[in-house]
Amino acid sequence: MNQQKRRFFVALLPPQPIQDYANEIKQHFAEQYASRAAQKSPPHITLQAPFEWSMDEIDTLKQSLSEFAIAQTPIPISLSGFSAFVPRVIYINVLRTPALLDLHQALIAHMETALGIVDPKAKQRPFAPHMTVAFRDLSKQNFRAAWPEFQHRSLEFEFLALHLTLLLHNGQHWNSYEDFPLASSTSTPLRTD
Image (cartoon, rainbow, N blue to C red; front, side, top):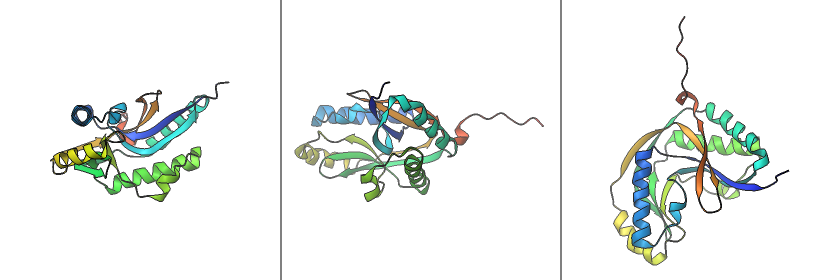
């Protein structure tokens, strides 16, 4: 029996044009500020921090996420400017809307009660939704050089989040593993009576 545990996390991924824009920013950080760590995952908004899960139990995880997602509705997401966790992280700011906060809270509760997945750090701090463009390998010196360039830079995007994405770490990068449609984002037959 394969007891190998793999690392996963759950996130919202923006539509491809927004991913492309965020990836251009990540590339800029790689070229100008020697920060490449953010390129190891697609642009995303983390809802459930990384956790370990046995591949033998992957169907249980997928079924649980599917059942959770189908009970949720698509939510509007607004991205506005840049912000930072000083002195190492620069990110695209995600507005803390009630719908996003509710989805996050519901997912965290579901992961704990249905699957026993708990992130102790998340329980101790408020949810700060963000889309990272530079972190970990961004030196303090390069942060100080980069932040003035992005601090007042204009950025406005809006999109409707239609699904949750389960991401899997392959040992080097995070990749989309499976999408779970939110309730009304799935097609429903028209009534004919």
